[in-house]
Length: 272
Image (cartoon, rainbow, N blue to C red; front, side, top):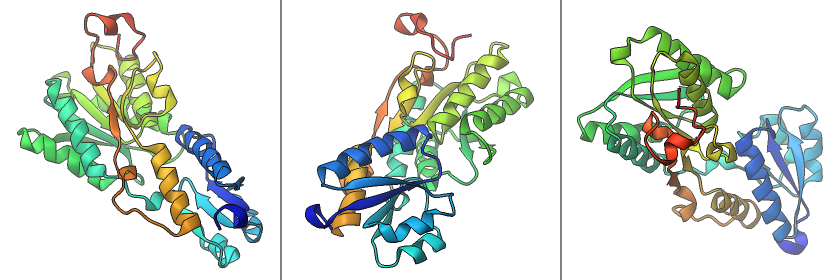
């Protein structure tokens, strides 16, 4: 399918407006163009998606798995879902755990939607805590419906209202940046002197904004897209490539409350 034989690649998602999906789409477009291919955006939730399948040379799903109906309509064309590329979640969770421990935090939580958590990421986080004689004190579950930011807000606010001040978690690792934004806003709105360090996952563009200064785990977006397209178009896989690893983006939110110096001058959401 590469170069001359590669024509139109369907790019599927359930929500192209999601920040992570939008960033992925930009990279997919860039790399497809470099390979001489064109992208056709397909709403995975639309029943008409399967009608487009026979017109495609291949299809890439950015935010889930292909439906049985789409697979049947696609016939022999190659399909690949980005979810099939498993990041080294254990290493990511462990690295975030070490960062939060280094701040002196003693009580820890993890915020996730029930359908989306990466068990390896949680295991890595918990293993580092255990090695330091700490544990995961709270597992907060955000609603799976609606906006992640709002569900993160509601889950965190409910926790702050029910937890005694002396027993509250001091650091919260969130399964996504959008959940983290909601949690940070909940801490800000709750007030009452509450300070909780918050870290996210994904490092979306908004994470670096002065509103949040969110510490997050950056996924190797370009490398993941390259690996996905190599598998889709060339049937070539690199099982343990650099695409599996990311890196910390250390900002301010993991510190939990304003410190002297640069942080005291910023518009960080953890300031009250």
